[in-house]
Figure 1: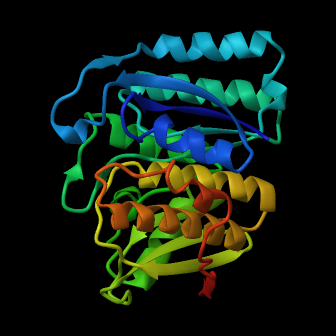
Figure 2 (figure 1 turned 135 degrees about the vertical axis):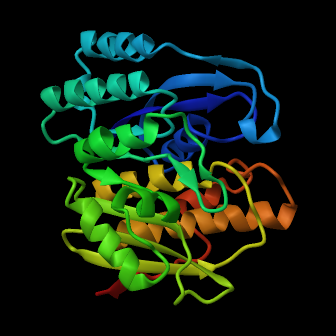
Figure 3 (figure 1 turned 90 degrees about the vertical axis):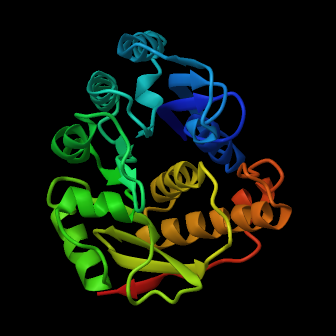
Length: 283
């Protein structure tokens, strides 16, 4: 399996492509990474160096792969943080080129907009671009709870509200949705939920809530869910495998007290999770 991953990148730490590429490779997926930015480290440190690449670079690189005759071998496109609407347009053009070469290829969009407690943190124009262009073009999206609420225009405090929000967003176009970092009124205080919805049903996976806050976990779980979905064709199996792997990685990270997610130290959890969390079908 070959995946084209168009995301940000950091030299130190793991966010964007630096969080998605290795987990995919560790489970046997070939990754063609295209970086939208290259920074020294993630911006959560408050200081960083590097630069944002022009949107035209994405098109140039995709055309270069196309010239090798390889786009027909691409199983899917994965995108994450978009620094500008121009970058988003370039990503959607890349998706269109891949689909022309391989009509079976899928597009997974992580609609990065904001988060609970922080609100919207992307540039003006990006939230509207996500809702009006990127999400309708995607086969799979992986919003967090805040982003699901923004895209649907609904509250997401209860499971019923979350399911209603999923209905609205799926009506925009995506066949599969993975809602990450979900905590509703029904979720125990010491647990965290993930909810995945697809044509084969809706499934919740519940894991212990770890005392940890690191960047990159969302990027990694989006990549793993997409890859497992392509391989297994099962929403339930994909969310179970992705959630179990990331829980294992985060547990190692928490035990070692690291600020950065320890993808290398805990790499065996990506391929063979120590604990598997079963999916539960929900209405």
